[in-house]
Image 1 (tube, rainbow, N blue to C red):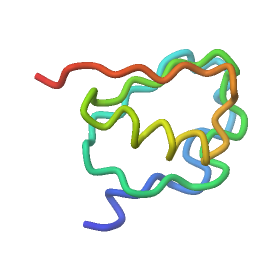
Image 2: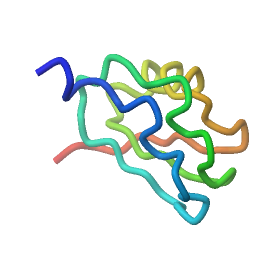
Image 3: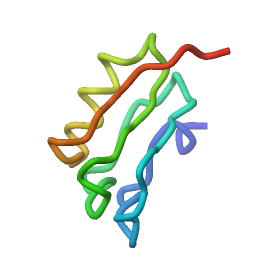
Length: 77
């Protein structure tokens, strides 16, 4: 179960410069790899559960997310 709560070290770094939006549905993410967003589009929007917005902002920024990326919260149905 722990493996499901951790994003791969280079989850979005392959050739994903065209990725515009990433949605994280989990509310139990505990770790994101240091290079997870290495080659992601600099204007990417990350959607996270609203309850975890502050916590995930910290996690994602430490994972190499570009400074121009947006992290927004959404209401989980």
